Length: 69
Image 1 (cartoon, rainbow, N blue to C red):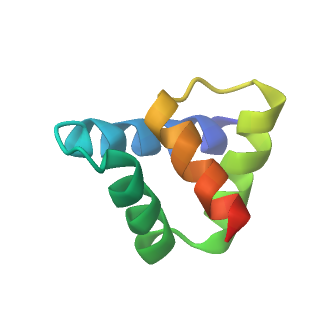
Image 2: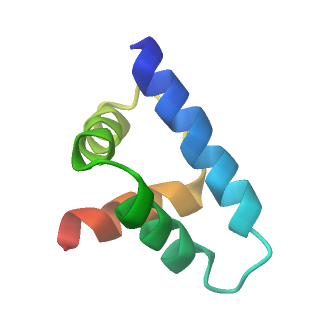
């Protein structure tokens, strides 16, 4: 669980960095695709669905976009 908490923290920090852009969700999605291993993405998606981690709405939207790819 600690690993997932760290992933959530990093994803929220990414969202903070892109928050001033109109296309923040697209930028977060692109960042996660380019720099995160698929296993990292999957862990965060799975735990987001379980409700055990707190993620910014932009991160949740980016995870949904990753799932639909």
